[in-house]
Length: 324
Ligand code: F6P
Image 1 (cartoon, helix red, strand yellow):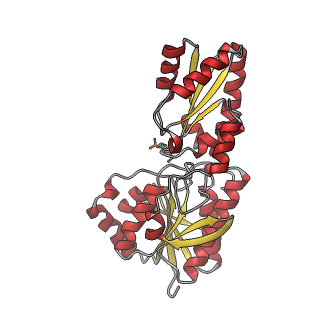
Image 2: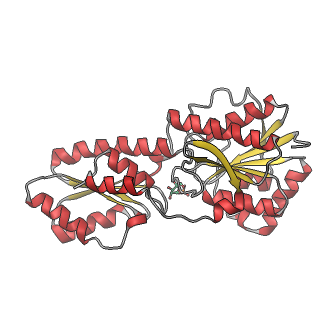
Image 3: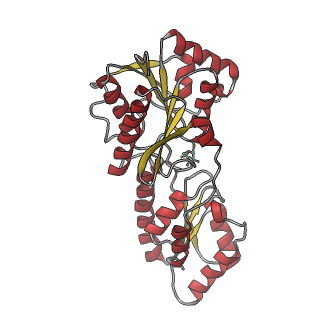
């Protein structure tokens, strides 16, 4: 890209393990090409208020293993308003920022579309534990979250077996069930409830649970995606309808934190470096994605207009065959 001298980078929405690797790779790639990098703090909030730090190789040296994001994050209500978007654009212009790299989930990437409409050269990287950005097979943070959830569910199972109880575990994922599917299968849950497949009918679950106990087994593990219902409500329903003693665990933010897995560090690094490569080739208004395990890029607005609520059917069918 002609005149690519200074870029800015921000992380927005729910933090995701591996975001730091993406930041680091952006900084190494950009500075290696003689491009200055400005870090914007607290996502779009910091863009509105122009809260920034210079990013150098030295600043990002030892961050690959760190969870969260060194640039901090936010869910900016203000950025939904045109006047604040305009304020952000003015900061970018005044500070001679030639391109902005945005790392985040669906909502954050839609914020980048608004900036693009205002003439900002944006480049997006999908980073969210939910894996709910449809144009890509992978989003930074998912692997760590799925592993953290699996580890927690394994521990819950130990207690569940010891006491002969039913455990209901709620995992994150917003409207998608990827964390539930992967952690549920990995931890061999007896039932996994996924938003993508949910028809609102609890009867099959209650019947399977009852039959399980009638046949003499004494522990049962249900993993429920937050997009369906909350775990306390489900446990209450189970108690009411079957009389089976049920305990609840809502895993919550432990799924967002923690040291990123090698996969998230690797994909963060790949996507970060690729985003700078695209910019240096003059490509803007794009989103980096993974397709068949390869790096690709799409036009941002077109890519985000694709709404796909499908789960891999083989994975889903297998999850049914491997549960009760
Ligand atoms: O998008 C990541 C995520 O952790 C979702 O799984 C969850 O629904 C949401 O963020 C929680 O958001 P907040 O951090 O605003 O409570």
